[in-house]
Length: 238
Figure 1 (cartoon, rainbow, N blue to C red):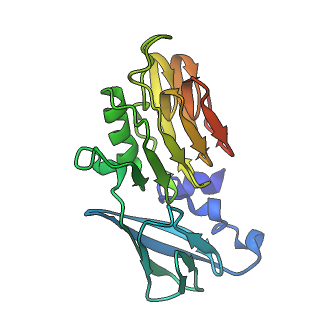
Figure 2: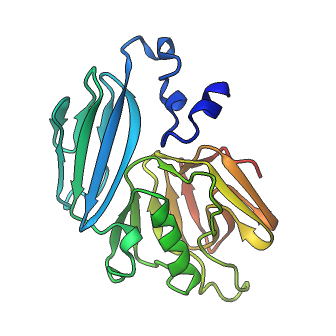
């Protein structure tokens, strides 16, 4: 916990990858990897921490073009193996970032790399664009920085789900850090507020807090219409 407090603003907290206590990770050493993601004109850069020998893989559909480049380490297709040194990695994916939703509203697949993507989804879904038939792929850990988050989707009524998320979200077992929802007048809240006929796979809320008037959840407040959750977890306080 002390290590977390020391590193909570470091992107993916150092302690979560064992950098504070490398002896717990086999003694290979922990190094910083500065990753720049390029997705159809949208660029996001963040620092992550990996043991030498760890592998990072970009998990998007096979028909999507992906390229990785780094001055160190090993690139094998869509996978990158961390060297025993601090280094950089550039990941280019030929898909729009969901943060660009207003620019690419008619695509069927998106990637998400940062909290701006979740904010864009909230604006779209809460405005009536349900993402039905659309799929989002999370390709890295995302730090919400404990900033106030507006849940994605709003409950309207049991007979109307016009402002609920109805798409598919692949978390790929990456983690959402420092989620914060604090609205005591909100009817349903979490990372998502309301979902209908949605599918979630491998979405992990690592830590944070959710406070609403009712139906608070880490991943979602409301889930109706046969929503599917596979390999998901929540570590946020409710």
